[in-house]
Image (cartoon, rainbow, N blue to C red; front, side):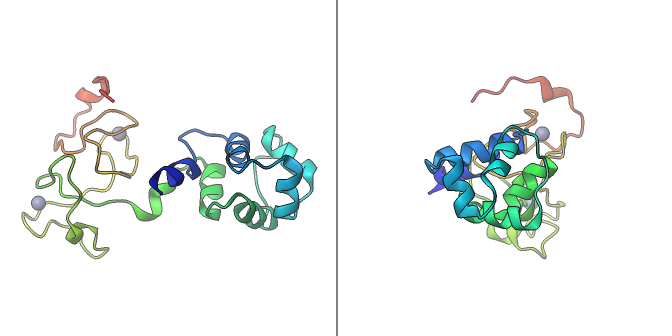
Length: 164
Ligand SMILES: [Zn+2]
Ligand SMILES: [Zn+2]
């Protein structure tokens, strides 16, 4: 289940064309089959995959989301070059959270802005590169290597190599 989600999500920096191509291959569809299911012209699929078209109109967006079985928001995110997890980012207390453990449900409450246990302001993005935190299975930001738990605001450890 989780693997499937990971495959459906756009990779950081992935272009719209590469993303569509990757999702089409995942489903084993030809350009023509995808075009038929998405109810768009097969030339449009070709243009998109070759990077000649960078934007989707509403109909193409809806059609592709349906045919590729991905949320339309993923397509929007690829077009804009933003990470997909923004809508459901994780909040956690940088003071109480133990790396490798799931966040306390209290932190995930949309109304929570401060830790119920220690009063520290909750965090939902990397303090260094501001990328949203999408998984608290990791200790470090996958984008810049900064430790999530760190309360320091200096970027000194950003150069640390990632162990995984
Ligand atoms: Zn706390
Ligand atoms: Zn970062």
